[in-house]
Amino acid sequence: MCGRFVITSAPAALRQLFGHIEQPNFPPRYNVAPTQPVPVVLVENGARHFRLMRWGLLPGWVRDPKGFTLLINARSETVLEKPAFKRAIRRRRGLIPADGYYEWKSIDGRKQPFFIRHADGAPLGFAAVFETWVGPNGEELDTVAIVTAAAGEDLAALHDRVPVTISPRDFERWLDCSSDEVDAILPLMTAPRRGEFAWHPVSTRVNRVANDDEQLLLPISAEEMEAEAAKPKKIARKVAAASSDEGQGSLF
Image (cartoon, rainbow, N blue to C red; front, side, top):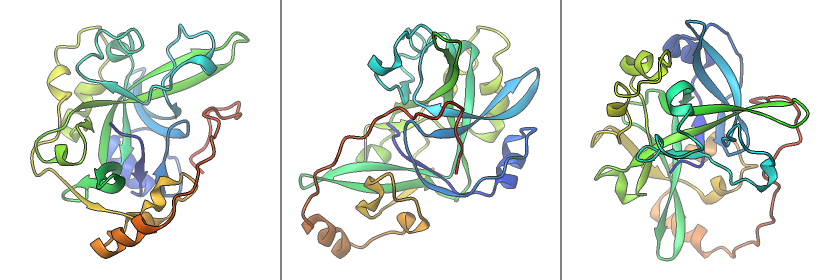
């Protein structure tokens, strides 16, 4: 799965790679989490655009979002059949720019976070599907989920699921929603090739969403991992999943 990710590339560099018309300006994000606004590149009226959407898809048929499970990921194996995704995968596909993501591996009964990135350090384009939810009073909320696939042999050592990443040469094919046909994009919903990604352990500071700084990306040693594991655990307080922001949010 993918539950946290990173955006550190300069906005201008991402615009050049993804080809969207808008020229957004936003700071690096080192710990993007569900329910937060995330950048999504989509095609509208024949051109690529940059939009902010809430990470956590809400299908249009949901009446009360408070009682609906947060859908941050969509499994590639079932995305064509699941009621929450079957329309979006055909008509509302997008790309989420990123520079890496975090995954947690169980080691000796504890969860150790790892930072995962492209082996050559290049930005990533997560495959995504989106929906615009319309509330009872006409309010609108653009929401998005990241498509995942079964992990390949190497990344399976960390987790059995990985986000689907779309190569720049396939951006146009993935974003083309001009028809309901999906045969052309089915081969794209696969795990990365062996050796395509690299990873290293990072501090458990990433566990806390409020921590959002470049230190989160630094690799830690085995000794530092043991020291963190020895720290007493704090009881986490429950945080409301939904934001009270009436707009589409901000990357700040």
